[in-house]
Amino acid sequence: MRQSEIKELSIEELKERLGEFKKQHADLKMAHAVTPLENPLQIRKARRTVARLATELTKRELQ
Image (tube, rainbow, N blue to C red):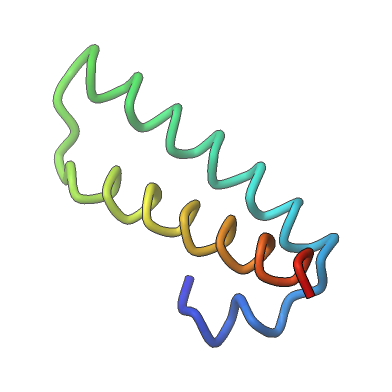
């Protein structure tokens, strides 16, 4: 997800997407541990998306 897309989401949508991407990241890591992924950069992309979502959520809660 791009930062511009994240800024358009509501707080509830942010929480929902954060849960989805955390699960996706965990699933990718587990799959990669069992058998190497064809494209291991998916793990990095998921991790960074989780960080972007968490950062935006924290920023909004502090305002």
